[in-house]
Length: 612
Image (tube, rainbow, N blue to C red; front, side, top):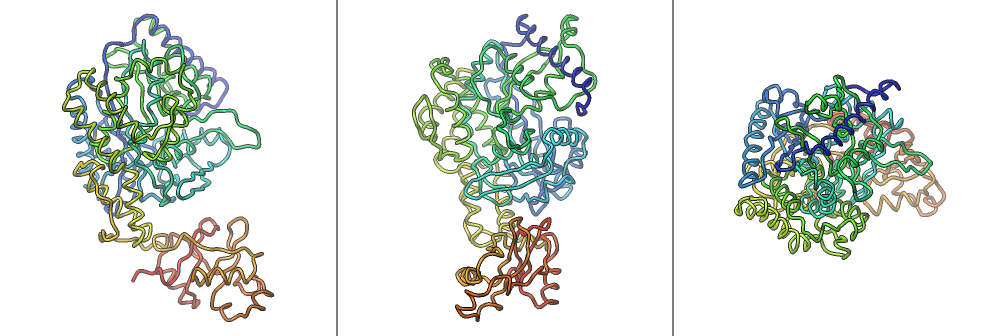
C-alpha cells in the first residue's frame, strides 16, 4: 500500500476503480452475486492495558504469541482487532458467534497476561490521556503511517477537534492518532442485491434507536462529552477537509450520508468513488472486467481499498466467500463492550430489525424526510436513551419507541429468519433491561461522577476501568451492573508523574484585570495562587495571596496585577515527577508550581496535592 502521488498513479488507479464498478454492474446484470444465503459476521476491536489499566503498547507482541490470522493490528499499538468467521443466519448462530468470540478473546487475554496486561472492551478507554495519541504510539506498520501522511497532505493543516457535551473538549492535533481512541464492534449482514438499496435505506433509518440503546463511550481524556463520543471524535479525527474562510461544500469522509439512495448498490459505490478523492493505492491490481470475461471471480481490490477510506456509519461492502461474490451492509457505529453478551444483544437487535422491516416501511424514502433520520442519529450519539427523535413524522422518546415498537419488530424478524425462539428472547431481553436500567454510557457517567467526589480524575478512571474489566470477565450484562459509589476503591500504584496529582481546573487572570478582581477571585474560591496568562494561554506571571492579602481597598483599586505578580515564574511540565516538584518548591520556598504543556498553561500543582 502506498500514497497516490503522481498524475500517472492517479490515472492508473482510477482506471482500475472504474473497471471494478463496471465489473460489479456486470455481475449484477448477470445474476452472479449471491442472493439466497444470508450470513452474519463481526469485527471486534479491543484495548490492551497494563495491570494499572493504562494503555499498553503490546499489540505486536500479543499477535506474535497468538499466531492467529483472525487477529490483526489497529492504528494504536494498544489496540487489536479480531475478525470473526461468518455464520449463516439461522437457529443458534448468535450463541455460536458468542462462543467463538469468548474462546478467541480468552486466548488474547492469556497472551496479554503473559506480558503483564489485560484486554478491555470499551468504546473509548477511560484511562487514555493525550500522551497516548502521539505518533510514537502508532503501530509500526506501513499502512498506518501512509494513511496519516495522505490525510495530512490532503488537509495541509493540523486537526482541530471540538466536542461539546457536559464538558467541552478542544484540541489541535498533528496526526490521525486520535482515531486510536476509538474501539468498535462492527457488525455485518449479507444482503440480496435485489433488496440492497431498500435494506440500506432501512439500515440508515434504524441507526438512531439502535445506537441509543448501545452507547458506551461518554468519556474522553477525563471529560464527559457525548453518550457515544466516538461518533464526534472519529468524524473529526480523520477529516481530510481543510478549514478555510470559504464555505466548504465537500462532505466529510466519515459520514452518515446526505440523502436516500436509489438505483442499485453500484450507485452507492459510484457516489463514494466520484465524491471522495482516492488516498491510497496497492500493487497487483488486475482488470476486473477481464477477469470476469475469463470466468474468474474478481475481488474488486481497487474498489475495496477505496471503500476502506470512506467511513460511512453504514458501509456497503463487496466480498467473496467460497468463490461466490456477495454484498453486505457493515454497521460501524456500535462501540466495543461493555460485555460480550451486550455486544451480541446489540447485533441481535440490529439484525432482527433489518430482517423484520415492516411492509409499510418500503415507502420510507417517499414518506420520511432524510434529514430527520440524520438528525436522529446525531441526537442519539449525543444523548443516548434521553433522545427525542422524529419517527414516522412524529416526535417520540427513543426508549418508548424501542420498547413498544422496535423490539417486537426485531423479534418477528428473527423468528422469520429461523433463529431459535429462546435465542431471540434471551438477547432481546438484555436490550429491554438496558432500557429500564443502564446503558454502558449511563453506568460509566454515573460511576465516574461518584468516584470523582473522592479521587483525582486519574485514579477515578483507573477504578472505573478496573470494575468494567471485572464485569466483562463475568460476562454480566451492563443492565444489571450497580453504579459504583464513593466508597468503592482499590489499591493502585499511581505513577509519580505530576499530571496524575495536579489540578486541571484552574482560575486565571489577564494582565489587564484589576488587582481587586484578582483579590476577590482568590478570596471567593479560597485559592492562594493565581496564574496570569495572555491571549495565547501562555503564562506570563503568578500572583500569590500572601502578597496581596493585607492590601486595603484603595491599594487594590489603584495598583495593577502587574505590580504584584511574579514575572516569568518557575514552572514544571506534567510528565515530571512529584519529587521534582517538591524539590523545586522547597528550594525556592514556594507552595505551588504552574504546569505547562508546549509552553501553554494546563494546570497547577500545590503542596496540598502531594500524596500523603
